[in-house]
Length: 110
Image 1 (cartoon, one colour):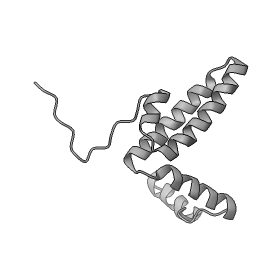
Image 2 (cartoon, rainbow, N blue to C red):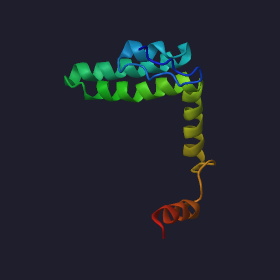
Image 3 (cartoon, rainbow, N blue to C red):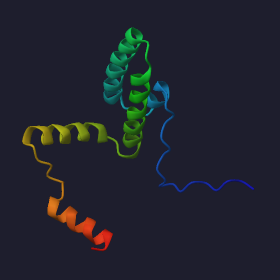
Image 4 (cartoon, helix red, strand yellow):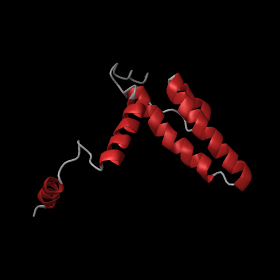
């Protein structure tokens, strides 16, 4: 029996955790960002003989590439929001601490 076809509105699968698979999911502007990080990490790996940072970068960019597949432009929106939070010290979308504590108390049944 054939496997059912995924719904047309189903989210695409994350790319494979390799540089070519990740890069294939990116727009040229975002791919340039990936390429810059990739080059730096490879240079450090050559010097240190340690691939840890390479694997960490692939893991990070696999998630970013998937986010770009699901919501194009998400990478640059993330950077803009990060800059806003860094420059103002405030996250305009964050819930107040008291509201979060109330949610936690409610979930814990207190």
